[in-house]
Length: 308
Length: 308
Image (cartoon, rainbow over all chains, first blue to last red; front, side, top):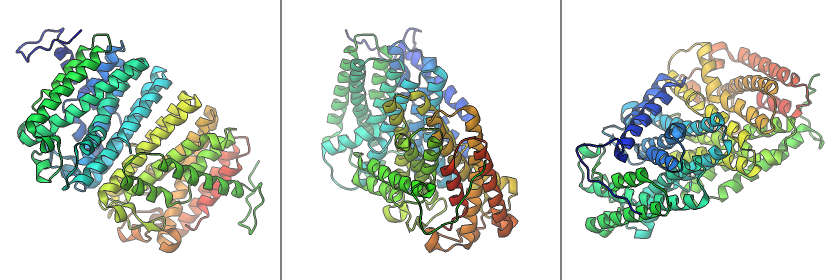
């Protein structure tokens, strides 16, 4: 079994996974915006939260949740709160990473970063509120669907991926490496926590919602690991080569700050080869599932062969 | 039925609720420190997290969790993860509130604030990690005790109390009022979100762990509301009158920044009377439970009649 990937064409048929993913991307957007309308928070907080969430982005993580759930027969509509929760955690992390005390980002997703518009205090608090809302969403999902057990497992997955041993820990390591030489294994450790953990959690949470078995979860975890590493390499290549206009965020920033990246360590050509190798390995892990997983394969392709 | 409250004496018998609360306070401390030993996070992150959690404090919120759980027959030892989770959320909020972009605090619990020692980036991230760890704790509690349903309800309570409509929202409102006149209802709205929401959640979460019924939860919520308002008034009185040495944090800070407080609005004597009235109402709500609730009564007393 293998996956035949079409080249980007002018038209898409309805059965094309790209078509389905586009539709789901819009549904994710709609769901997120509705969720942010529901609260009774102060208007300035709502604005700051909306600014960052509404900026869009590829919605890769929620689409991974949905694709993993659908692979095991669980419908997209029902898993939407979990997909949204993962995107909320991702968005919170972008806001906090962009703060002046951290990466001091100016542009994100083609717009000024949250603190550049709303100030530092509100940006910190908007991040806090988005992170908290993610866990509220998962609780609501579990209580309304009457499936507390799996919601609690998802809750734990997400907390672990986001927390001290995951994204937060990775960001700490990342800040500590600025301006000094690091080794390839060190770099991979940072990337696996900072980026890989949440991508892997997205796939796993979708599968847990669909009550996938342990072996499937293992294969999906491996797929997620490959995805995370490939994603970070592609990100670093784009940061190095890309233009701010296409990427929607500051470029060349890593290099300027002497930040270690895979392309800097092993060269751009080798880094690109490595990303493609990881992509093929990711597809291999999907093959091992023994069931159609076109959306997951297409998302891997989009992630590696992207220009923004 | 009523509660006989002893005056602070030189000796405590073993049946004295103060004795039990002291023992539980030490158990909470121990549990929290062990929890912070368990992670595989970068050492600097662990240090920053430990610094703020280990600073101690009254542990009022975890003791409220335990007291509420015990009131409905659920043992202190089993509810400890929930108690710890509430304290983690409280500690995270102190770290973030103290940041230069917010209240710019220098002293907290008798020590330099987190960012004064570890820098802003690590303080933000330590707060993020503690908030996330709280939700991981609750998930672990539910999964290990085989009571996913109530853990998920606790999860939702905590997220709501901490999030956009609770603490985060309250902090936003609070920041917005600096330097301008506000009304009493406005002030009560801020306090109920910023302080009251988590105190109420502590009591409710303990009771939910013990599967207390809806009417009991209602009475406990009312008790928590009174407690929250009384707590904030006492806090403001102490900030106005207290000395940094006794309080362990910056004093006079509210006044210096022209921040509205209850004593500033209605005078110290009237504020004190109001706090005592709220205390009596809190006891009334405990009476309505129709079962012994000595620890909850004692905690209310300690909260209103404190000097730090």
